[in-house]
Length: 322
Image (cartoon, rainbow, N blue to C red; front, side):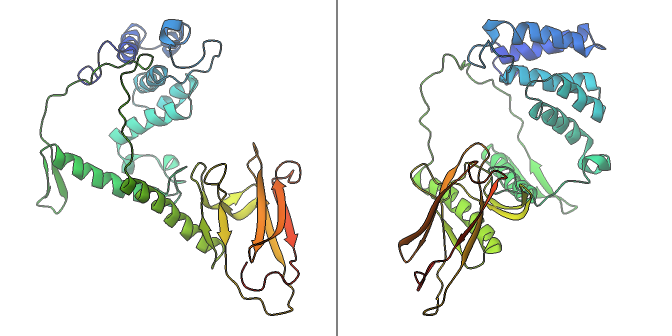
C-alpha cells in the first residue's frame, strides 16, 4: 500500500491507523473499532463528501477498507472469525466481510476450503446487473490478464507441464497523483465510443433474446434497459420461471412482440400474468394490428400480492399478428 497509494490521502492514513491500533490492541478488536469510529465516523474532517454527518450510515471507502483490514488482522487466519469480525464492524456489512473473506480464501485456495463455503455455489447463476455467470467471468478475466501482461512488456508461454505460464516483468510501483473527491481535477471526458456502445448493447440484447426464447418461444424483445437484474429467473414473488424486463428509459418502454396467424372468425384469448417492482408501477399496453386492445397501470393498487392476472379477448382484431 505504501508504494501505490498517495501517502497524504485519508485512505492511506486510515489503513496506517488500523495497523498501528492493531499493534496496540492485538487481542481486542472492539477497542480498535472504537478508535476507528471516533476518528473516521464522528470527526467531520474525515466525513467530507462521503455520507451526511447527521446519519450513522457511512459507506466511505476509508471505513470500508478499515473494516476489511480489521477482519483480516483480528481473524488471524480463521475463516469464520474473519467474516464475523468484519460483519460485526457494521456499516456496509455485505461487501466488507465478502472482501475480507475473498482475500483470505484466495490465500487458502478454492480446493482447500471447507464444503460449507462451496457446496451451495451456483456457477451458472448470473451476477446482478450483468450477463456474466462465474465461468464466463473467469474466461474474461483470463483474457484481460493476458492482455495486461503483454501490454506491460511480459509474455505468456506454455510450460513444460502444459500449463500456461505468465512471465511478468518486475517494475517499481509508483503511487498515483493525489486527488481528493471534494476537490477533484478536470473531468477526464473518457466515454465509450460508438463501437464500444454497440458491443455493450448487443451483449445485453443477445442475452435477453436467449431468455425470451426460453420463456416464450417465438417472441422477441426490444427497447429493454439494464437498470435491474433483467433476464429469466427461476422464482420471483412465489412464481416459477419469471421474465424480468425494464424500460429503456422513461419515454421508451420495453416491447415484447410476436407474429401469429389467426383464422377468420376465430376468437382468441390473450392471458398475461404481470408483476411490478415493490417500489413502483408501470403501464401495460397491449396492441394487435397497430390497434390498442388493453391498457392498465400495474402496481400496488391492483396487484397487492405482486401479480396481476390480465385476460383480454380481442374480438376479431388479431387477424395477422399479436
